[in-house]
Amino acid sequence: MSSSAHHIEIDDSLAGKILANCGISVERCYQCGKCSAGCPLAETEMDFPPSVVLRMLQTRIPQMDDKILRSKSIWICLTCEMCIARCPMEVDIPVIMDFLRQESFQNEKTNPEMKNVIAFHKSFLEIVKSTGRLHEVGLIKNYKLKTFNLLQDVMLAPKMFSKGKLHLLPEKIKDLSVLQRIFKKTLDKK
Amino acid sequence: MKLGIYPGCSLTGSAREYFESVEALAKFFGIELQQISDWNCCGATAAHNLNKKLSLALPARILAAAERDNLHELVVPCAACYSRLSVTQHELRHNISLRNEIQEIIEAKYNASGTILNVIQMINLYFLENLEKKIVKPLKNKVACYYGCLLVRPEKVLHFDRVENPQSMEKILTLLGATPINWAMKTECCGAGLSVSKTDVVAKLSAKILEDAVSRGAEAIIVACPMCHANLDMRRPEIEKAMGKSCKIPVLYLTQAIGLAVGIDEKTLGLHRHFIPVDLPKN
Ligand code: SF4
Ligand code: SF4
Image (cartoon, rainbow over all chains, first blue to last red; front, side, top):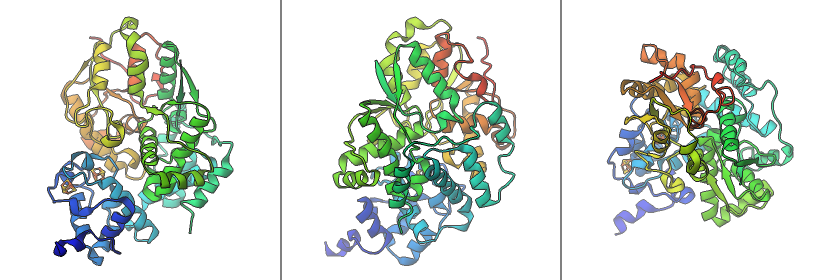
């Protein structure tokens, strides 16, 4: 009994933090690989397929944890939820991925190749913070400034506009102050 | 009969025609839709990728406003918003201490009460009874009903349809006179929120979906998600490049397909806003 007991402890490892924060025990994973088989990105875009991320978490080795937080996999993951739908042990990988992204982001370990994905998320939330709603023109402008992808999507915009799919001006919500306090108490909390 | 509605940001912008067709159908079937007062963005993929509490607080502010407005039944046509709102309600219903914390963050009371409906559930509950007798132009086409991820997963939160082989859209399309095909990609992901930051990934994933639908004889794809529609319709040039051939299959919202069958005109349904023209073969 004692030999395996240490595996389900809440400790400083990512596995321990996942247990403490998400209530998920990574030890439940028995490496069947169904998650990776169904994951639309495991084969082509990920450096570590989801089942491998799970195995790395199980080791509780600091170097492994560091590799996970610096991986592409956690940021390319689409939260499509296919893995949990098929996992025989109901290991909630999408929830684990959310947690790993936040750890990676807060500890400034984000993978440099994923900088556009992260820039997009940040641009999105900045627009929401300033107006309460998403404004697509503002989002693209903001994203371009962050990534210097100045030409990307210029071809899409005029057509979207002519189809009535773009607002030039943002729609602001009335109670913007409470929204900004929500951001202060969450994302912008130091 | 009155229902609450959360349009969400895309339905006021890039997916305007989805909102137009939802409103047209509601009017046609005598349902009043009332928007939640002063609604905000649900935070979408960005919020849950970067900050869990923000990803709960943004939907919770919306749901709290719906409770204040006495909108106990809430329609959320955007599958992505539907997912975020449902996950938030589920989590805050079961975790009281977290709910208290989120109430403090949003500075409002939130009871996690009420029912959240996706567009298919709204149709089944409020339109289906009268649908068959109102059909004037049966849709005589082979169609691929495409659910994507967020309408059926995660199953333990949504309890909506079969997770691997859902059938609810097929039932509706059959009623409309169409022939739904059996295909392999109906719950695969189109690339969703990576549309701008990783367009190549979206093109690859969406290409597989269109490829399978077309090879099995589909003449249209039917969707109920603005992200799926945006990727499959507006990203078509990139998808065609990934496929290495031209592909002109139109992508319709479920509500547009129903609207056509009951005789609502194309303009009211917003068909002119699609990038790929909706020319259904006359069979
Ligand atoms: S499907 Fe579940 S049990 Fe199988 S490898 Fe993936 S996480 Fe582990
Ligand atoms: S949620 Fe992420 S890890 Fe799971 S199958 Fe989808 S992309 Fe892969």
